[in-house]
Length: 463
Image 1 (cartoon, helix red, strand yellow):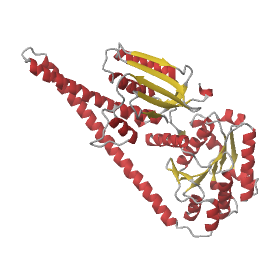
Image 2 (cartoon, one colour):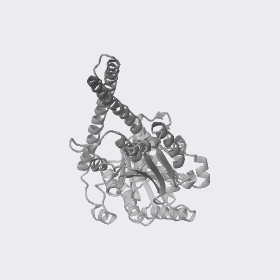
Image 3 (cartoon, helix red, strand yellow):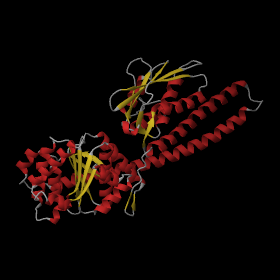
Image 4 (cartoon, one colour):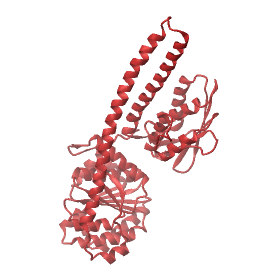
């Protein structure tokens, strides 16, 4: 079933741009080799809950135990937010997969000292392993420290000590900082002690991070918080410029695609009418036929551009049986190529987690393979194999020339120029859809006419 990233936290709904950002964050958590110690900086409580629930949801989906320490939010607010992203909170709590506690109470039991806090987390990690969980994921609202007599130096001491020991335990911890509550100096120290940060729904490699050993040497220094904030501002400003440019390009794309398609339909219709006249000489009929063929090709490109916009705009993942999927794709292909000889082999029980439009991607690559064969009865072999415990490969074998070297280079590098460009949108569309589902398209580097699609294998519990 596809994951529809529609969130409602309290009475605050999630916009289309936020849904896309949350989808991107989920992909980051899937793909980034996350550091054991992560800081999340936010300004609004809505953003905080959306990111925190995405973090918890990912941990639970991966089969990890997750601890959530609340403070700014109430337990009821956290539970409501978790339920809004389709987490069965009651069942998870009863199973021990999820633990929700008051941050002040939990940290108070450790005596509010860095060593005690670190020890409690180490014990929780060992208990988690003893209960059969591979990893322990922890999300804590750091605002709990304002209810104690601790200074932030005490808190950052805990952050540094925890950062040092977290490398030795199968653990991921998300420290949540409200930028409206913490001063610039505190934020700077938080930046120093976390190798990864989450900011604006993005997992970022932190350029300000220093090792715990280095931090102890510089902890008395006055940080240049202004420079750090200016750099963050520059990054944010650059991202806004990119967003604005993408919006303008999207408008231009829609206008050009719509106008070109409609005008070409008119031109094609007029040419078709003229071609039906008996007074047109044969040589002119050939010209009209050529014009109609070219118009059809451009109309097809415009239609495919619309498909690109529809399928790439909001990626959604789902678990599907690969054999059933290929059966559906084969029916589509044989409707176009009635004489095609298409065979599917291997992976009778294989299921994958991928973009919901994966059938379009596979169909595009298969069409390319069929069209590359200059024969009445083109052949195509679709072979499923398990490439690793986490990946399933789908190989497309066909009798024809391999994808041209120029197209392979453009698709691999992801950049088109006037001299290097890919012919048509079909290959681009397939590549983007597969990558949306955390997969990869591999193209042969030799003369072997083969395309390989690598997809993420679904856990056995989902199959």
